[in-house]
Length: 326
Image (cartoon, rainbow, N blue to C red; front, side, top):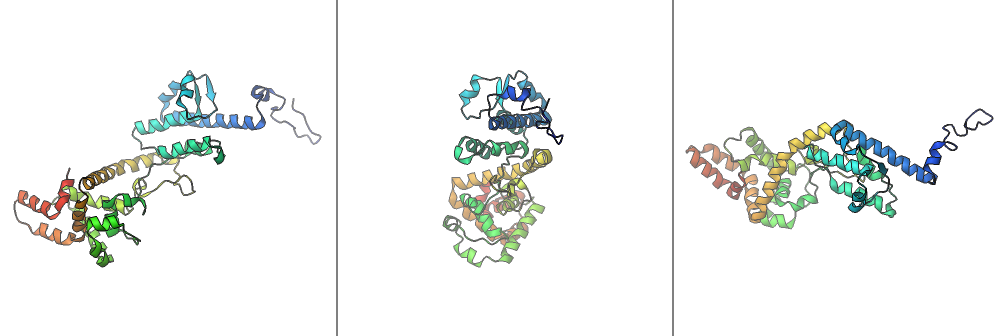
């Protein structure tokens, strides 16, 4: 029986202090009890994730002997006791299933950083950061920032010539390779608008153009963070409130759809970077294509030659870009 105060309220309403629960957890301190209970709660919620999205995967845990509470990054620790599992192991299993089933890539970088924070005492983290991903998706987003885009000169070129925001600076490397020192000085907002109109016409009527040209509108939107797709336009930062914080329960299907739409653009981006890496000087042909787009388009539309000759003419007009064709 719980003790009762004179006012009728219970000193120990759950019978915990004098009951079975506390005796089972001894010799743990109150702080230790809190840690264990927190571990059980997280374990429960990670199992719920598996049960909701990958029910057959639960069979792997039928012979579970105990729940592991001590976090470690040492693989040998887990191999010694295969029938003892921590909630973070189930969470990692869930993440792997998400990728294996083709939902979308997991941001393993931030997941691993969360594990490192847990192990390092100076952060005073008790697994809270890693446990965040029980509810929220560790998004792997591919948005380009003003700083990161400098690593991808063809994308930096597209951004410099087409971005509607003010481009504060352009790398010297790009100015040299793309030969656009003089062009940028005279490149105006109407010029940007005309270049976008040119790209939209390509997208509306791609037939006259080779694959190298057809992919440019999508890559231009990617370079300018204008795709409308969180995977291509966003950056994930788990260390501030902006995130963006998308939950498994409300956003999984949306993120899956966003990833499926983004994959082709990312493949084109990889192809563009390989094309550039083989011969960096060819970036000048991309700059010429964007700056002289209207003139190139007029020459293509005026051509009355055979289809074969016309294709040769187009390839000649777009210079080294023709090697981007699939």
